[in-house]
Length: 203
Image (tube, rainbow, N blue to C red; front, side):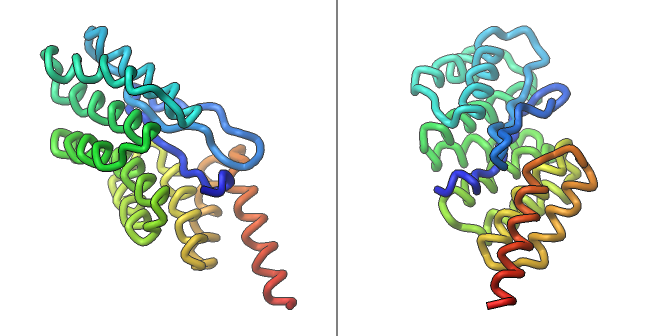
């Protein structure tokens, strides 16, 4: 995949902090979900997912704590949904997309209001070049007013751009900039989109 078109992944966290943004014009984060309870395995799963989200790489050993938390711990529904999401992110990094979809859908069954999960499902479709399905998932995240709604707009803009829908891509990048004026990725993507469009018009 063109690394300029790598979608932003969202981890479940308590406050959903914005992670580091790569200055070349793409984000390097998924949003993992913080664990509100005291389960050590679930917290280790969250930390592993955060690393996997940043570097898009992990080891299958990082699944161990997630599996232990889900099978041996008495997690609250919220923390179970969080751990399923975090394990799903690790599966994405391992390119285990079917397992990731299963985990993320399981999280939505527990907490259907978590729009962030739709962003991560959309990312799986995006990575696999199914941009129509990615748009649907990002739209679901926006409709549910996901905490990091600007992320859903950026990712949907990239999916629209892949589909050749310049108008809607421009709208999403513009909305993302209105929400987070300091964000460099939507500005870079918007400038490049308009520049490419102008070049085509002039040729």
